[in-house]
Length: 154
Image (cartoon, rainbow, N blue to C red; front, top):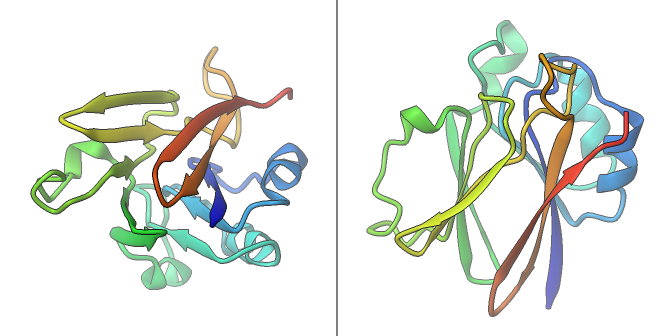
């Protein structure tokens, strides 16, 4: 069994066509906060099931349904999602989390620490400073998680 997860963060109300085409073949979509507008999640849900968390700029009645953190299990792998890594409220290794997905900084990042992957897809929304516009994809099978950061040509 193989699944593709499309991962984005910090759209701030802008869903780029490049994002939509990149996630068009994904089985699951994760949004790590600062969505900006409910229409972003509605559009993504037309493609695949969406797991989203609330970011620090997500305000208004529509955000009440968004958790601050969430976890998903896919093919035996547990993935934990939050917006700001500084607010991590668990010990990933003790909780048997294999991947932490977060946003907030707008800087794409992937590292491994103590057998846990940490993935920030960067910002898929409005360009900030000279940072690239990025998102990520993770291929998941029973044996492993295979992450990739994708720079969008915008």
